[in-house]
Image (cartoon, rainbow, N blue to C red):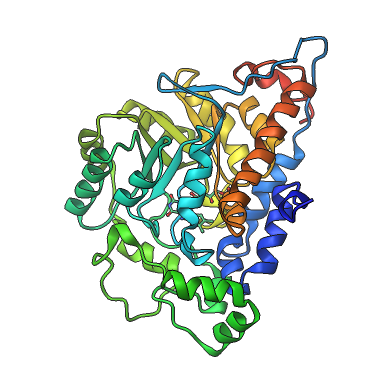
Length: 382
Ligand SMILES: Cc1cc2nc3c(=O)[nH]c(=O)nc-3n(C[C@H](O)[C@H](O)[C@H](O)COP(=O)(O)O)c2cc1C
């Protein structure tokens, strides 16, 4: 039995990441904002739900397919956009994207990715989506969107919940910043994790490839969240949204929506889908958990509009519970990045654990097809 085979859950990969990464890097990925109230609620929300399964339903061939904007995907999983992935391991984003591509899972490339739009498109054959952070320079946004279109990205995800960087207290304590400012603490952590350090030295310091030259003023040693936040357009409003809608002809999904009224208005203003998310508990501490927010959002936009979810998904059962509350697809952030600590093979293992979990969950719930899961699967008390 290989070392990776002994990891049988996302939590096992989280523990692997905890051992293999320097503490500052692990906490940057794993941590949340403020007191981590929302981070904890994201898990607690899923853990509270109980199911009422059916029997004698012929589940011999579980069907995991899901259809989004008239395209049928083999699974209901999506990879959430993540910046700074190369801090975990050089090439982590390509490892995640290629493992996802091999399973037909869409990979969402972040504006703040450590691999550029062009390079990712050349490296990966599967479905690629592009996530836009709306930067202050509106023309720069338009150029990013154009590049994504030119290189064949099939959906645009506009993230709207980073009006400013969330206060990540762990990052402040650990002095994790962009540019990296090595301190004695980091040196000691690096020496204690030689494999990680050697890879970083060989791979070169991580860079935000899509916004090279844009972030300016790199002198202040801000945390990553603060640096990104400072460059985003805090004045972003409905007029700006309409411009972005005009630039992009394909499916446009808005990520970071929790309020049902916002969801309804976004659809009325031309969005094609809503991605319910609290940024994995990394932004507004105290925000409602995604699994508690999704029901009202789904009700507000109706059955015809694809609603996606992320924040706290660790098991196949979470994906099933999310569908019962209205999520056509579930996206994973940290789960994929924890897998990437062990390279592409680690990500493949994480994805297969989740897909096996969904297939087993469908069978044991007595539902032959993912798309048939509805609110009646949730026990009245859950
Ligand atoms: C290291 C890291 C970097 C992230 N960077 C981005 C980003 O660049 N853009 C974005 O929209 N969300 C970003 N997020 C949030 C994720 O897209 C996603 O909403 C969140 O991770 C989902 O929660 P989960 O990690 O519990 O699955 C990031 C999350 C992490 C952990």
